[in-house]
Image 1 (cartoon, rainbow, N blue to C red):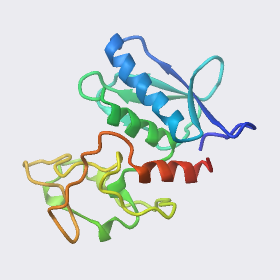
Image 2 (image 1 turned 90 degrees about the horizontal axis):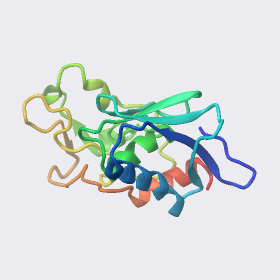
Image 3 (image 1 turned 90 degrees about the vertical axis):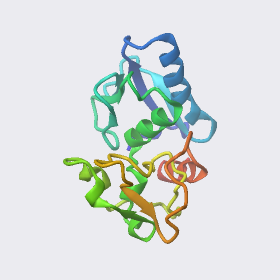
Image 4 (image 1 turned 135 degrees about the vertical axis):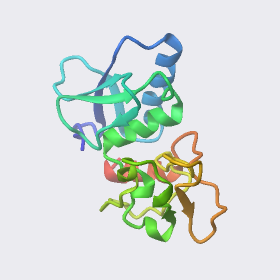
Length: 188
């Protein structure tokens, strides 16, 4: 976890590499600042802090889960990752959160259709021992993949239980459950 300051805020320093357009920068910075309105998390421009997020355009959208230490890469690929929900998703990873479909209680809510997942990408659906922080499984979480995520054959890779027709994985921003989890983890 990122440490809490004496003032009760959690300051997470960041730098953004200079290969983004002004529109892309605006989307990223809006995502960073969105946390201010509903949590004690404050993303701040890095000055001399040794631990910080380094936002870069690599191949794909990804981040280490939790605070790694030193310069921690958050990849927001210019080709497909510059969306508000994706920025929030990757920042939640950096703050310590896994994908919703990896929750320890997911088998009661989502059936993973392993046979439809692209070779080598099944790890993205591994069930983990997660901190669910007394929040329900959330089909509307910004951390929930969509029905066809990593599909090898244009068939669904997940379906909700018990009603397979429930929509999921379409969040455009953090859900109330995402916010509640974040505030509980960091005691905001």
